[in-house]
Image (cartoon, rainbow, N blue to C red):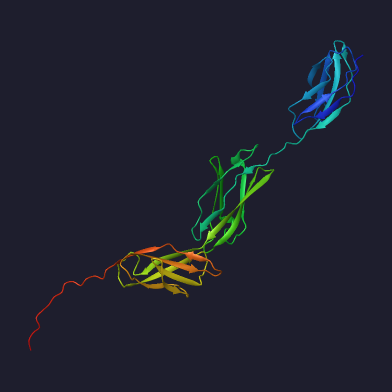
Length: 299
């Protein structure tokens, strides 16, 4: 008579199972291994040779319960079954996505939308173009969440943002990447810098300017800042200071040639804004022409 001992079952790596049993007979031709997905209905999945007492079942579904039993057979018949044992395979281990580092960014106030900033994302189980992206701003008065644009596709991922008009300051933007199970994030800081602009208001920019002539310079300040004082410079020399709005400057052009005009705005708290230079070409005073003399009539 063929007699089997108790079957034992061990979890192996991944969705696999190791079965082992005691061979208590000496005349078997081999062993049949049966498996069930409900503990009631069994079907044969393999046979092994005589004197074999182990079987390695592979290719199982993750996070699933299986039941096993074993019997011996020879040309005359088969033994009874071992006890039934069960095993629940491990759930799949979902590796989280990854996102590359994004360097801190700076932008000029009132400059509109930023250029697209490329970044990399990846995931061991999911194509990167199928990952879901979202982003948030820590300072929505400066950069609102709705002013952040994200793209993701086969060609890569990018982010751009549009600071609110008339605002300056800083905000931390955080990008979130999820594969539906795990979510990772990466943050970077955006600094929106105020600006000072300078233009010639009168005579109009691009006109001819003559020695000794006065020009009216018009400054503007982007980013919602109001200066305490605006200093006007001609070729690096202080020419005028203004402390009241609209901060316009009236400068007399003291030299001929190309002069560089510039302003420095002193901000509350000690900061400064320096404008780009405006060039004006100052000409000599035009010579009088068409001198005519006529004889005075006698009396």
